[in-house]
Length: 191
Image 1 (cartoon, helix red, strand yellow):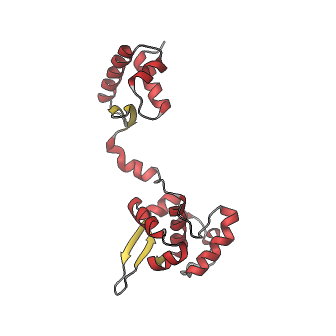
Image 2: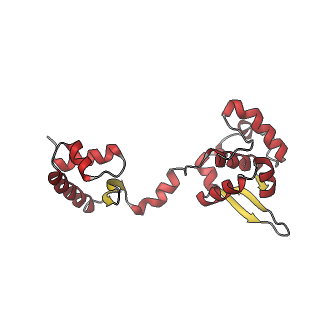
């Protein structure tokens, strides 16, 4: 039979979220004191391992997680979650290649301001002030290209016949043509 600490390790792994001690004890079929003793043993075991994982107590309970020193790996390997509206705005920027924020707002509506802010924060869009203009120029970043691996696709798969920049009207036409095929809609929508 497995030792209690190993059973608790399995419970933390399987649930994948912080758990309180009472729930852990119930799942392990033991009393709270035994669960607490086994949890301390497990935490001590992980503290002395050369491992990417650690068991920690958070305000929400105990959890098995990746050590903080691996945060750059997490950022590189797991794409950020963004809403549908922001994803559609991101697609419009990617198809255009570069677009002014003013043109993007004309294409996507006023919700694009919020989407751009979100996309800049997650590192998918670069926003640069243009000399002599009140509007910023928007472009996708290398992080976007790595995350979605679009550099590896032939330009025809993206629905573009050329690598030349296209107008906002052309981007909308492409979006409408591909809406049924890809489930992507560039028309104005908040989310």
